[in-house]
Image 1 (cartoon, rainbow, N blue to C red):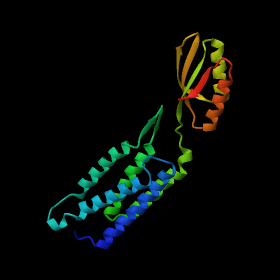
Image 2 (cartoon, rainbow, N blue to C red; image 1 turned 60 degrees about the horizontal axis):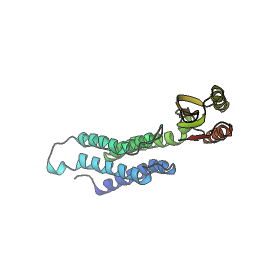
Image 3 (cartoon, rainbow, N blue to C red; image 1 turned 45 degrees about the horizontal axis):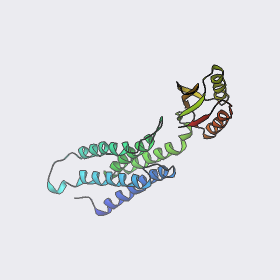
Length: 215
């Protein structure tokens, strides 16, 4: 391999720092793939790119380094899929999966010696994760279950409480229970935890509501 040892070390340490910076942000939010996982993906991608670009020179083999890079991107896709979790009607982990995929790209860039694009990309990714989070238009969906008596007036009272809290109902399912009871299953849209807590308190204060909770 005709790449100097100092250059190899510089590329690996750069990958370590850039990947770790993104992983640290994910770790701070308690994500399943955090600091160490991002570092390992970044370092592994860098090493594979170094091997692909320089490891076959001494063997006199004509080889396209892009082939191994493509395999890295595909492989990280499977790793990222493991970070995606389903919690009720919500899907979590998509951002972490995307950050892992991006870290793999950064590692490949550093491995081939493209430091400036790798650093700029890292800054943009960290900025996106930290600064643009509050502009995310996607709200969280929750399953609200209510058990009450089967009377039209009762449903009016329940939905009046929902309206007072500005709760958006995406889906609704009604099923009849025993002793004239009625079970409501509502998919509501909100990511304000305090709003949900107040909603449950007010729903459970309704006389004919025997149970109201978020699943």
